[in-house]
Image 1: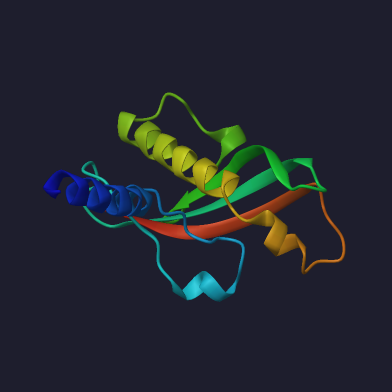
Image 2 (image 1 turned 180 degrees about the vertical axis):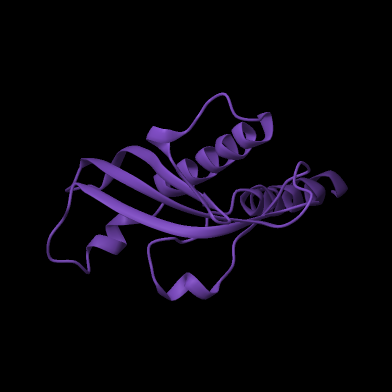
Length: 139
């Protein structure tokens, strides 16, 4: 009996614990601009404000499946770094920061609910540009 109850409790709460670790911010609306997105990172000594722009290419605009997400630019403080001008020979921290931004932004934008977003718009643009801001803070 105890094993059955324990099994049922684990079956109910394990999916909730897993889903909390993979939260994705909704980045398609201007209404969520007031909400700040924070990412904890052990390499950050201080809070780093990161602004970015992405270009999204849809595979099938009828179903809104994302073919690719391309990080076009990242702005950290006053420095605006475009992907085409990014110098690979910079410091390892700059490379690490670029990799973190690229991984997070790509994952977030591949998993956005585009069907809900584009149902409000009468026309569809294949190559769409979005942008947002997030903060990298130390643990």
